[in-house]
Image (cartoon, rainbow, N blue to C red; front, side):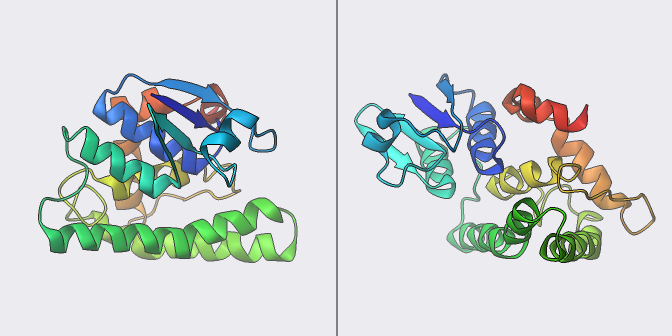
Length: 201
């Protein structure tokens, strides 16, 4: 099994977290998104990262890859057992991508411009607004660590890169404690590339 992964991209990071959580032996090929090789194009007509090659199977789009890995290596499970809860987890991932990841893309594409500043403020305010959901549950809307957390953790790890600092207040403390909790997981630490570690010095 080979994962073609951008060492700086949050979407590739998601898949590396899942692989680490599952303890899967995989060859990780660090690849610059701007220098896609013919080997990747042969597996993925869009030339996007991450791309996973497992024998004769080639998969792309991070959500598809993560769910495949969760089904192929069922322990520990990273999606709920019951269909309603699984569907809800998928909706949370969709909303994270649509609401928050869209903003991170705007920040990275225009870091010093008006669009980037507006997106930065909106993301900061949105994260602060949801901080209270971690008061009663240790993970994102769940007692268990799931694929939703695998999607959220890479984005939160990159907040310094986005120019966002969550200051500790009574309101934000549950979110900051959640961040410490997920960042301290062995799998998360194993998933980090050298370039990702540099984000936090």
